[in-house]
Figure 1 (cartoon, rainbow, N blue to C red):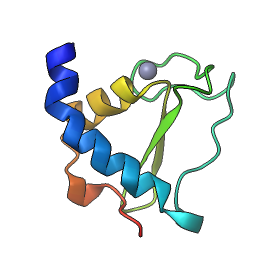
Figure 2: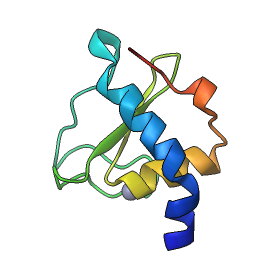
Figure 3: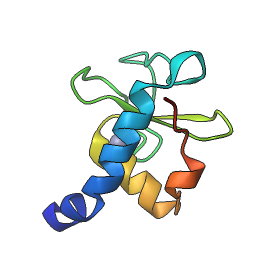
Figure 4: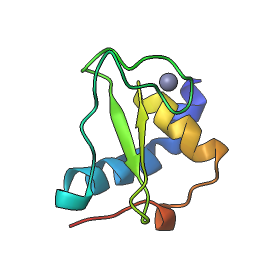
Length: 87
Ligand SMILES: [Zn+2]
C-alpha cells in the first residue's frame, strides 16, 4: 500500500491543486453520513478524510479517503487530462 501511495503521490498533488481552484464548477458539498464513497462504497463519515475528483465534463466523484480517490483514478485509468483543472 505504501508503494502505491508513493507512486501515485504526484497525481494526488496535481488533483489537490486542481480541486482547490475550481470555483463554481468545482467540488460539490459532501454530505457526511449520507454520501457513499465511489470506490469502496462505504459511507463518507469523517470530515478529515473526505475528498472529491471532478472530471472535465463536470462529473463529481466523492470518496471517503484520498487513498480511495487515488485507487479509483488508477483503476479507471483517468489521466490528468480527464480531471478538471481550474485556476
Ligand atoms: Zn472509499
